[in-house]
Picture 1: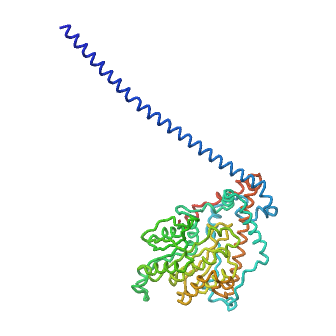
Picture 2: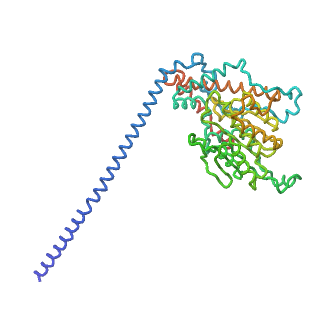
Picture 3: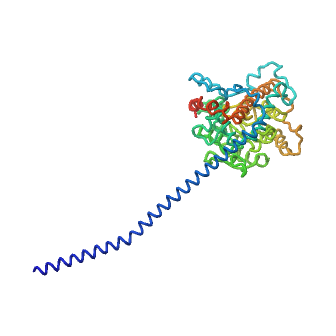
Length: 490
């Protein structure tokens, strides 16, 4: 009995030893796997550290390169730049010493933060005959303002020698309204420019209410009781984005140039059931007519659209001395397209630059003769150092005749074969309009010159202990951007 019990205990002990040894073997088999995992984790961490060090090294190298470039600019290039010896640090409000803004000051600024020069309004129909007198279209003379324009020219030439990162920084820190930027929700600054102008000028025409349609004896089943727009040269899409956000039911068509060399011109928004986007060269008559046919063949827009917006520009023309001339044909083609598709009573918005030579003024003369109201506008969201401004034409009188449209198309078709002095869409302009054009031309040039000199002053003194220090120039904190957004309804 005792021996049997001992044998059983010995057998259980042997079995336990077998189990223990098998567990040890199993553990031995598993151990290399966990070791591999741990090794892989260590390798991944090492690789991450290596990548991080490389990134930091690249950033430091880039920063060092920028600093060297900036120092070289200060030491070598600055001494040859114009205007600095005569520069007055208080010449413009955008670069004046930082001031305290009260709520009342802020609100008054918000209410008036746009420059509008009405060239023609409905009230002008009652003006004296002297104001209605027509004068020949001549270039706007420089006269006593020639120093301002010469200064702008010198600044633009000097900008070419400033490193791009330094120029961008100087432009940002010398413009207190730069913070308005893209706003709260939009892809680029264009949307906020249109928001600024739309708030003050009421560009979007709301569809008639059901009551007004019922009361109107002239309305018919064929009338277009909706809001439609066309966005010309609209890439990347800020204007369309704002219009669709402002009025979700709005129907839109957009066209822009597909330029692989200037990706900023391509659409960055997606088409929707209410927004049709396409690519094409609007300086080509065939492209214009196909785009027009697409809109007018729509069941919802057979009579045209209520609003045409044009934001065309060339990257090559940016800050060039002959920027105005380079834009001539593009503005003409946007107007040709507009006259084909805009309903009577509709509005037109078009970006332009200086309006001083004969062809630019002739385009204004044409708009004045075909719209009830025409204005030149500089929204606060348009940088002051830029000569950019917008033509606003409201309430189209009537559709252009087929003959008039054909003449405009013919001018575009023969553009390269036509001498500059023959590229005219009008030869005379009301005297009062010409006078107002001169006023806004000189006024905007003065503001632009002050802003350009501020940028140049910052770029050439920043970091040298001069007046271009960060704190004396940084105006962004002097405005409450959300107060502007709220006031404009965005």
